[in-house]
Amino acid sequence: MSGTLAGIGLLVGLGVTVLNLLQYSAGAERADQLRSALLLGIPLTVAGALGLLYLWFPFQRVVARVVPVRPGSPVVHLTIVLGLLLVAQQIGAQVEAGKPLTIGDLLAQDVPLLILCFAGIGVFVRRTPRQAIERLGLLPPRQKRWWLVAILGIGVFIAVAFAIEAVANVVSPSQQKQVSDVTTVLFSHFNNPAAIVFLGVLAGVVEETLFRGALVPRFGVVISAVLFAALHTQYAVSFATLEVFVLGIGLGWLRVRAGSTLPAMVTHAGYDIAVGFLSLIAK
Image (tube, rainbow, N blue to C red):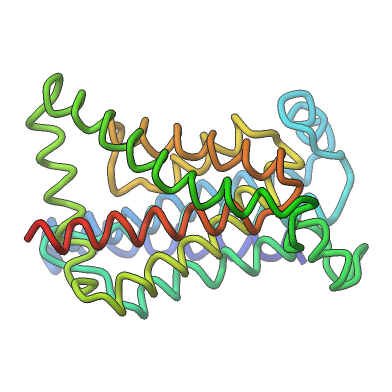
């Protein structure tokens, strides 16, 4: 199944890339249209090729030396293929300037992430739904005090984010302005309290289930935080990337210490909602 998915990804990527290059060379396509097509076609081609390469057992053993995966596991292969295709889709879904995100866009990005979480840990294959929920840490923390820590963490995260942004404004003001402009455009439809709460809760639930629930127990806090920062590619490589990485470290620490993903969800959602309301008030 995973090999078939990788093959489909490779064929679709190659098809999109070659077709649009031919149309552009014939004068039937504009440069901006070609760029958008390549932004989808090339990542899909690379993802599909890597997924097929992973079928080669010696390559699996090389990967296993870098990350803690089990060579020969069909569940691991499926997870890797889905992850590669998901990253390719995320890259291809980059929003051009002037085109804000909609609720439909967010659901199209986040629903596959949830599917990846449960498929990656082998639900219905090696784990029952109950075991999958436990593996993802979707149960209350061992001690109730972690709920209080999660709420206090919202304030800590805001302070850390503001500190990093203050440094960015001094060191690289032009880049920081570009990040701010991109963020404003992307989330311009989410400019009312209900939309801000929806956005915060969706991000908190989906991203924490994936990064802290599924990935932290397997790859650890640091690698999961790197992947978390990499997902937010709309910021490119900037102080905003550093900010997301630092917050990812904090959320990973909370996941490990609490023994549950739920407090990290509260902190993440609360932070996003608080930032959204602060931006709304500042307008």
